[in-house]
Length: 206
Image 1: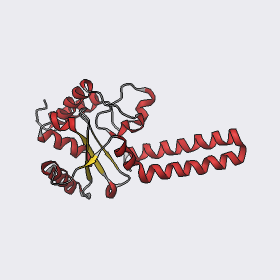
Image 2: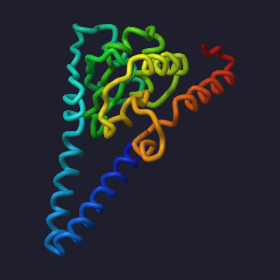
Image 3: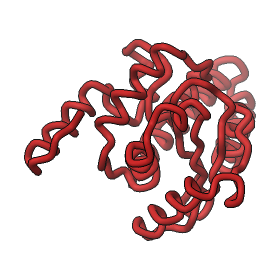
Image 4: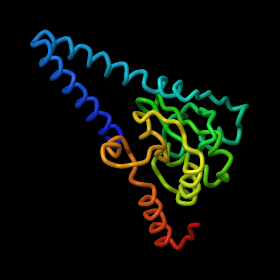
């Protein structure tokens, strides 16, 4: 089970417990039952429709093959190599450089990239980012992460904290409870890890 799936399951279970506890405290057994039913409905909606909600939240528009043939072919090839169905591809109208994946499983997956990320990354770096989002493998990713970190600092993205964990570069600053929603280690740690891997393979990063 993937790390983000474990975290999502944990957070949904935690929310259910909190709601049921609050319901019991305010309404006794009847309040507890009503809170449990509400939690089930909320979790069900989150599971089945979270991808649509998030994509609509950021104004993402689906990209057809004819609109971005090179990008579409890259994602199609990466999906084939990863042994997964072709995900839907979306563009987010934001100058902030970032990308995220969403969907309840591989058959209902979507990958979204911002207009900003298409401007600052070259084809190889973008391929590394997309490969990371699709199959969690980091080729040419260290260079891309450095550019994305600088770009995200220059052009902050207005982001709902509940969806920050989906992005390849966390648009939120800070630690503490915010780290709970992150599926990635801090970007500097990821860059150092990628550079160590590249050094072992005799590759130059940067």
